[in-house]
Length: 343
Image: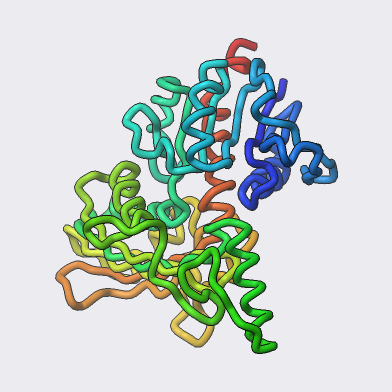
């Protein structure tokens, strides 16, 4: 017996990727329903070799649906996730709406699968920020081994993390530069083509941005509240794939060679770390891949116990759609879907 699965926001970058990954990983679904806003009704999206027509989320009856993958933004999730959860369906939400709610588990399956136990308080499970997801997968085995005291991370985030309009803006600006057309930034505060912008989210009173704050508080919730973390988020002219420069200070000694082997053996990670030209992962290398890639592993000699890493991942996959499907697989493996458990 398979599940009834609905994808809300199925016309967006992440929603389409959710459909792709459900099919690629052979998730046991008897029925897949593609949902979006009323203006998208009738639009066709792909699910493997099948085509699904978008239905209106607001008029859809969620009764009898087992799983809802929600990728329609925070405002929509705030309004609809509790309503859907009340029908008995489990909502795995990709927005920031529920991440810091103490009633809602925030899960990266390779890092804190035990948190799934609290899913039924609201029938909502939160997916972390895309930059947080890849970061904590790399931090987890190192924290277990040597105890992380402090992390300094600078992100190099692709435009797809800001949505389809952001991708279109990079494409259009790039074309205009080649023909000397005037560029007027619309989605980003400054030109993104051939530029980098040290700004993600909205500015807060302390000078940090909401994107930087998310990485800090989500890492604490997922991994360990005692970890000190500071982040600088930078948007770069890359279509897909987030990169991170990560500096870590530990409580106990750990050498780069040991860390390299430990990361190689850890779930969800791929180590590419040859000390030669090209012996490292870049965003292009990670597009379409499930793994989080770790490179440039080296000791930081400025502190007693320190390492520096380079971490790269497909933000539409591990940073969003893949992690959501992995959470669903975790529930499946633990027998938590009520209809299957009853059967």
